[in-house]
Image 1: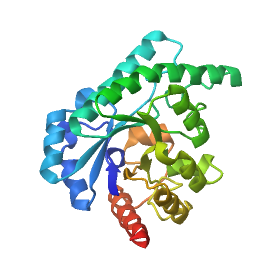
Image 2: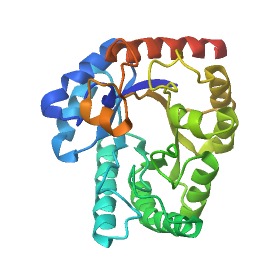
Image 3: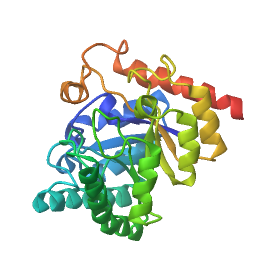
Image 4: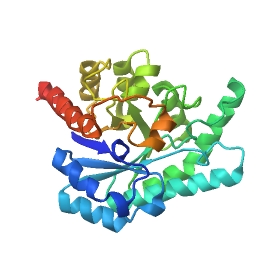
Length: 285
């Protein structure tokens, strides 16, 4: 199992011009991979990113950012087309960088207006499946898989739990689409996070290890032992990535409502979180 850190811990939007040295820092902290949030692909030089990652011995994972204007279930066909083009850009980047997955909630924008009623919500889910089918085929042709992330109810009304995520995967009908689970969102939405992980099974393509307050993994209420047991039971072989948002990264802090310090500093989240996850793994070796 490999361990990674998401660039959101330190910077947003990530750019190779300003933040390429972050790869050196993440490598020094002891991580195996860096997960790059592609908020603005125009800011990322793929050759520079891939070259530096190779130099410092890091793998690279690609994660999408789906704010306003990136919505596959928008009533505006132009917005849907632009979102699909963005996802294809991420798939192309993943193929070039050797990222096996593209993570994130590609099915719809974070914070979109909730559907008016259950029937309208199902129509949006059907639309998401229709929009994802050609993207799944595009990903599969390039050796990449789409990992769809269920989010908590305050960020989306479309996909909140594994059961809904699996239904969307089934509707898409492609082996190149699976789930990206995050313990922060699961802590809010699932009745039993471990059972949800087992239900995801081999559809679990990507995993975020985040504390219930988005702080240091191991310092909060997430039942990490049960989570680890479930991951090993399903023989999960993808990366485990720490993602957090702190007040220091102001644009993201506003977007996810971080109004207080959740850790002494950004490096503490990464370093102590990694140490905790690695110690947790020792029980299985």
